[in-house]
Image (cartoon, rainbow, N blue to C red; front, top):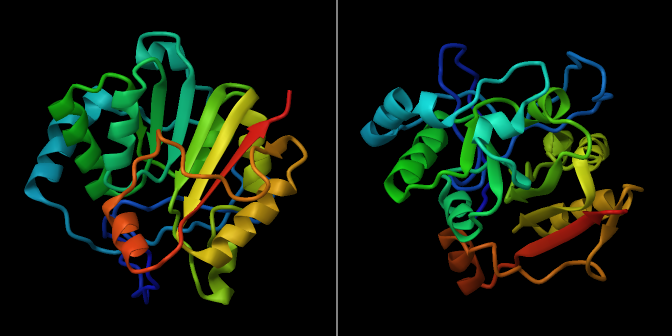
Amino acid sequence: MNASHNTPPADPNAAPVPATDPDTQACAPLDAELTAPRTTHIRSFVHRRGHITLGQREALETLLDKWSLDYAPKGLDVDAAFGRSAPLILEIGFGMGETTAKIALARPSDNFLGVEVFNAGVGALLKRIEEHTIPNIRIIQHDAVEVVRDMLAPNSLAGVHIYFPDPWPKKRHHKRRLIQPPFIALLASRLAPGGYIHCATDWEHYAQQMLEVLSGEPLLQNTAADYAPRPAYRPQTKFETRGLRLGHGVWDLIFTRKA
């Protein structure tokens, strides 16, 4: 499950690696207004040298051009990117991509756009896409805030998945958490009416913050009284299974965009 980490000084030449469990890394929150171009914001990932397997590196070298999209500060032509028109699901911080791949395989009529910054995770998902022949996933290796702000049009998303983002458990680091009011407002504006935001966390305090932030967004409404049961489409991760066996909690939250 997620754990606190002491972050060493950043190496400017290092590739980014996760600050939490490898299957559960999400990207940056922000404190400032998001709608203005080039707004700076606080990132929740740290750049440190990390392990990447030979298979992941080979996938990056041979498959990145096939399944990834470049970040650009302009609107994304989603139909052209996927070669079809279908509901678009955004996943922020897909970690090693196991959950992403399983959901995409189970929902072939949806398109999935995964945003992740870490090389190991991107390489791992590229391998899964190729090995399991999953045509409905595309990857952008970039800061999620900038992708949502600059590339996704209002009312363009059918859903958003944010599973086990870095909890930044120390109080002085809470400002780095992904789920903050400005970012949720931005995501809500990109959802089509009836679209959903699905978050999951194994940190109770973060779950409480998520509930407060999501409930405070005027465009969203909760699908449950507070926390939702884990829906069948979200597979239980190995970290989650281990934590539940040890008596740890997991909280799902599902909010929809008001019509």
